[in-house]
Length: 178
Image (cartoon, rainbow, N blue to C red; front, side, top):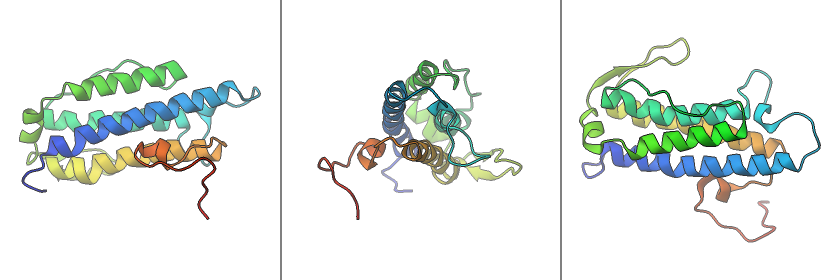
């Protein structure tokens, strides 16, 4: 890791930005569902059988942001408001995670960069130092679940694009990739 770039700086602002984007995707999904004929809820939509549904993908992504910081801070993950049972709960969970991250002590988090950590990944128990845990495990898992939530919305017909995912891209109306 670049000596000028701290573990906190490489992760917490990234989580905060993309949680804001995730909250915007939840809002778009909620609005889209309000205009759909009654049927299956987008909350329960999945890419394929056996995969987590949209609401679970959102909650897991938010959870990885917390899960990335707590071992470095040497604290247990807090019980956060919200959940995955409805639109309001998803917004509440994302807001609670953003508030938690905004309060993370950067110096304390950075001090955990070399701490040896073990985690549970399905049935595996990988070990990392703190920096590897965040950069090679928590951030990729966060983005995996964020991308799955985005992909579910695309599959369900929402006209979301890269600009909705990252908030940085901009394309003219009607733009389509060939």
